[in-house]
Length: 296
Image (cartoon, rainbow, N blue to C red; front, side, top):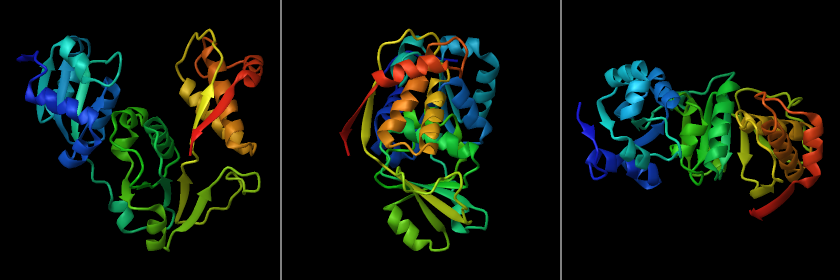
């Protein structure tokens, strides 16, 4: 098999453009997925892989996965390690990259059934957050996602990576506005997620199905965390999500919730065990964390 070693190759240029441009992803109906696990997830989820790229080293290191993806994909190319690194969004790429055709998983929205539960996302801007929400929604057996048109691109490489493959399986539609979608689907009982001490607890709310829960953009915040001795960062993102859940269950304000989540995540990074933290570490970090609201 010929090894691609020029960044001017049309297939490589196309993949790089898909990585960089949301507009081009929309126009071409294609997007990219990076990493061994994500590419294998795409195949196992029966996504249409237009082109599969593998670096020289990865083709040998993951020989079985390479063989399976090569058989499944429309086209396969081996790329020199140097050029492959330039194609990717990650700092330390694993050597697999797929160009995938945009998915059509909207059937569940055509005929809404009793028991269906949807999540509506309004003006969500952070790709990492969207990816995390997608994988969490899949774990909670959400029927489908409704995105407002001003949300970040669901096919952004960061969303695809953060979703851990959920983007290949979870149905979604894009609506001009969430309010417009709700008005057009009066059969859905609608709920809004808000950070308020006077709101009903999500854990005790008797949801009526079919239903939809709307989540809005509460603004952009930044957590300033003190320098720590990070021993193991694996699972720290999930620890932070658990911290958010804890803060919301306690009815803390959004800044207080973010402060708690950041303290738990940082404390988890200080220990060898994955997904584990010591309460004393968290309590020591908590008063040192500063939350800044950047803009609405």
